[in-house]
Length: 620
Image (tube, rainbow, N blue to C red; front, side, top):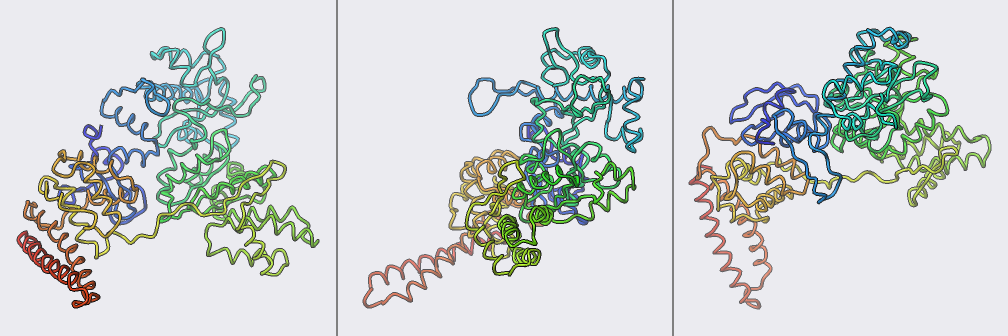
């Protein structure tokens, strides 16, 4: 797959790449906003790496990151592009469910056909007039409907069924798609007489539909009916509008979560291009995980997630539930609520696009919104009411992940309650020392995270000057393994003082070493598979794409010189340690130890001289 799918062609569809010399291409990174190009692609090794945000990997990683899909889906998408027939393991061996051969492409194709059919019906069928009026009353014209692919499902119970059968789809495929259901009399359209929103994955492929009730005689009373769980549609992992919002989310480091399809439309048309919504379910852990991927949400890239809720009791409950998931983000969480209780769709209709933008601009920290909700439930004029409010609010303060702000929130809470700061701080300390729960009305306990998400240990950058020789040596081994061969076997972890660089060397050894390296990208892929540390894997991407600082093609002498210089530094460290030990050793009372170490020191000095000559001989 990696050999057939050229990484420069796949990435070139998203990024304008220019020749950077040394076999590398360069362009503006699609994963973060930048003005000067730091995104590098090396076709010969099949790797990309951004020196601005540290995103990197092979062609499969790029598809996963740019389209926000799983590894399996990325492989299937690439296979479809390059014409590879995939075969799926149906032996029952190994974890996880087995997939049918070509299942995703066929189901996506069925949804594309259905989406085109529904969209055509919206503006051609007489019975779709009700749907067109629905959109018009909410401020959406034909262009808006076309942009979002809105359509209409005919009331005829077999309209889509006939279309799909006419295009060669089997009954099994039609049922598996979720577009049709089956009863004792046979197959029938799942969606009838409803306004249809195609739900697309991050790559733009339609994988499901959301259907809005239009007619009073619709036997299904639910206002919205969604595609059931299928092999390609999992509602807990799907966000409506993600295909339109993903790039803007990544660039702006902001995501706006609204409550419905029309709210997403209103936000995008009003200029808030980061809006997404859940599909027939409440916002959950899996949705948070999707947003983290879109936001590149980790410690180094703190963005913001803005939730919009109605001002009623249901909106308050939704805010409390969202706050219980706050620990799932490194990004800061906010909430935007229109004082009049209007959702973005109604707000745009009543007050225009600017009002929608202003709504998002008036965001307040989700913590403060939930705190106001908690305090409003108590009579703060009574002493017992203030104490009860403090006990319930203390876990909220504890759960704030930016610990630098905790003391300020303690003081703020003390002022709101009219209590001494030390009394509030004491209660917060108690809350931090035990597992806490708070209640969402009568809906039962909602857990509040009291610890920060796992973080990587503080490790210096491997690009610091003191690690330069280690860095350059690994670049040579990774990019030109045929020049190194058995010389690599002389290296060990002691030659690398940075843990991530040591992990890369260990991965090279586990992959068989450069003496057994396959040509091209196969060597880089093999090394990557042998590295368990994600930080070291990111370093590998940089090593694979960064050109050598050389104005000529490297040769074996050049490669040997780099490895010799690296070993010389290790030798110097050993010499320094031995000299220090000799100084602490009495040559009279500990004559044997002293003479042994002195002889070892002389041998090390000779070895260091030999290494220096090898380094100079390679013109390092």
